Amino acid sequence: MKMRMREAIVSALADEMRSDPTVILLGEDIAGAGGPFKTSDGLLDEFGPMRVRDTPISEMGFTGAAVGASALGLRPVVEIMFMEFLGVALDQLVTEAAKFRYLSAGQISCPLVVRASIGAGLGFGSQHSQTLENWVTSTPGLKVVTVSSPQSAYDLMRSAIRDPDPVIVLEPRVLYADRSEVETGDHRIGKLGVAHLAQIGEDLTIVAMGQTVNIAVRGTQQAGVSADIIDLRTLAPWDRETVFNSVKKTGRLVVIEEAPESGGWGSQIVSAVTENQFRDLKSPTVRITTPNVPVPYGKKLESKFLPSPDEVAHTLSEFLETGNVPAPWWVREGYVQ
Image 1 (cartoon, helix red, strand yellow):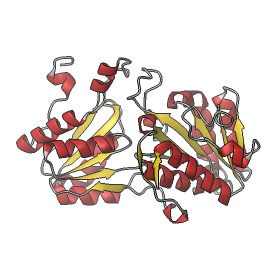
Image 2 (tube, rainbow, N blue to C red):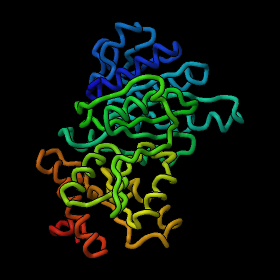
Image 3 (tube, rainbow, N blue to C red):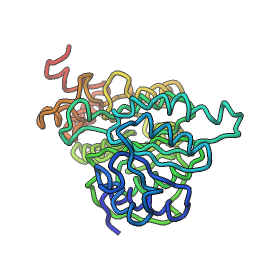
C-alpha cells in the first residue's frame, strides 16, 4: 500500500511492538501528541502508556534510562526530536551503550534504537538542520543507518529493533511526507550493513544516502548520465562489497553528501576506494557536498546550500567530459578561493 515515510515508521514500530512485548518507546511528546513529526501517531492508543512513554525534556536522562533497560532485557526505541539534541546524551551512547558488549566479554548486549530527525530543507535554521553523522560513526560498537524512502524507513526500522546492539536511525525530516508503495511484513527484516542499488548504469558509481539519493537520481536524469546509484543506507558498518564491485565496473566514483565538505562521511568512502581500488579508477574521485558554513535559514539560501539536481548534473557532465574534479559552486561563484 502507499504510505508517507512517517506512516511507514509508525507501521514498522507497531509491527515490532505487536511481535515483541519487550519493545518500548521513549521520547518527548511521542505519546499523547503522536510525536512531533507524527512518527508514533496512534501507538499510545494501541499499546498504552507503559510501552509508549512521554519523557521530560532531558535527553541524557531518558537515553540513560533506555540504556539500562536494554541491558536488562527490554528493547527501547528512543526518539530524539532533532539530531542536535543528542549532544547532551552522547556519553550514554558512546561511553556506555557502545561498550557494554566489549566490557562484559559478550555477556551483556544493548539492543537499543535511537531515532533522530536530521537535515536541511524545511527552514529550521542552523541549530536544527544538521545531519551530524560524524558524531556517532567514529564509535566502534554503534551501528548507524539513514533512511531515504518510505520502504527503506520500514525495512531499516524493523531491522534495527531486531539487532542485538545499539543502532542510531537517522531520518531526514524533509522526507517524512514523501509517499510511495511500501511492502510490509516480517520478510522485509534484514541484516544491517547492506546497501541498495537504486539505479543501474555504466558511466560511473554514485554513492548517496538520505535525501541525496533522490537528488542523485534526478541529477543523472538531467545530465543524461548512466550511473550506478548506491543508497548506502548503513553508514556504520558500510557495504564495501557493493561499492567496490560497482567501482570495478564503472571505474569512476562520485559521492553526494548532505554533510559539510570538511569531515563528511564521503571521505571514508573515497579513502577506502582509493586505497583498495586505485588501479580500477579511470579518473579522480569526486565529492559533492555542502559548504563549510552553518545551514542558512532563508529559503533561497538553504536551497542553494544543499546539493541540488542542477549542481549534480553540472558536476557529472563536466567530470565525464574533462576527467577532472569540477570546482564546487561556492568556488565557481567566488565565495571561497
